[in-house]
Amino acid sequence: MNHGSCIAWLSIAFLVRVSATEGIVETLGQRVYPHVGDDDMCIDDSTSADGGILAQARFNYPWGIAYDEQTWNVYVADCGCADTSKENDKIRRINLKEKTVSTVSGSSQGFEDGNGEVAKFAHTAGMALDSVNKKMYIADSGNDVIRAMDLKNYEVSTYAGKGREKGFLDGIVNSARFDNPQQLELHKSTKRLYIADTDNHAIRVINMTGAVHVVRTITGGPTQIGYLDGSLTEAKWQHPTGMAYDLKNDILYVSDHYNHVIRKINFQKGYVTTIAGTGKAGSLDSSISGGVFLNYPEGLAYDGRYNVLYVAEFGNNCIRMVNLTNMSLRVLAGNKLGTRDAIGRDAQFYHPTCLTLDRANMLLYVTDQYNHRVRTVTTLGNTKQADSKNMVFKHLGHVDAYRDYYVHHGTTLLTSLYLLVALLFVFLLLCCARHRYGIRAFAMKLAGYQRLNKHQRFV
Image (cartoon, rainbow, N blue to C red):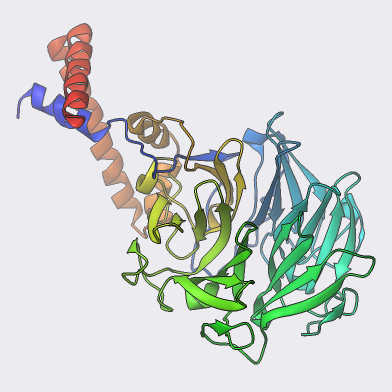
């Protein structure tokens, strides 16, 4: 193989590569050490730190996430490692304008109302923003309650349920009971707060109009665990989590987590239907009608402009996109375990959990839970371009690139060193090529090949 063909081969590997259905993934904040060990082996480590500057901030098993488009703030439920002395259980705020991170409420595990750090949570999960009344509703899953946080002074109060009293009971909010509620969905025009009451295997709702707010079960319940489509009273669920509401069609989309499916509740028809998944866990995609598999779907976000549903798929470590017009399912970003910021399937996640849509900037903010990070993913309509070459080389400049092979892929340290040696070999090859042709000739040859290749791509 001559030097010219070597240069051509290397050029092909790093062409600009982005399309309307490929998301560009980037990390917000510091690149911290990912989770190590089995999925149920939570690391007892107090890694949460504000640091002021976003690039220095750290998260610890972040779960819920919500975006306030009026203030450009991203709120993160920094869940931490459950049932340990170093439990985070904080609500963090990322100010995108100032690029800073601060803790606005919570301190350590417990159950207590109060202002700022006086408040205590247990396993903070999904959140729902009420931008009109400047409140944030929080699924305090470990305490089996729904909390309300005033965004003006960060005062936390218990809104629904009674702390540390599991149960399944409809009624006025302070008398209702829940069991590990994990996700919330609020639509300000209908003033309805939907609750995924996960361990009750039920979808509940609070009508927030009037002076008295009442909890009502829409479908499911602790005696209806299973997997069955049908009327609201017939349908069976198994640990529902993520939700997204389509106001135009009055449809609530739900991630039925342990059934590995996405389902919709059509309120006009009073019926539950599966739209994606087969009921069994599996790997990546194709058409929904062809029986594509899902693997522990969680967070959902609906974009009515394109009639698409974005899905954080915990088990397959990716973000999917459901086209609700032609009922197709594609991978927007991610493919396997890892930390790499990249485009489409070249990007990597480690159990993405929740997501929220920034409609103005056409971005998803994603809690990449086991990587202890918050990531952004471009969506349909976003015109941002990215260069695979630059993103890959940038990743290779971080310790993540080598740590991934050791942590995520179970390889030995020796294998990781082999990879480093191979990369050094490629670098030396480039140096030799530059010496052979000269810097200017080498650059012209490389640029000339890329121009030719670009022309060929669009013939």
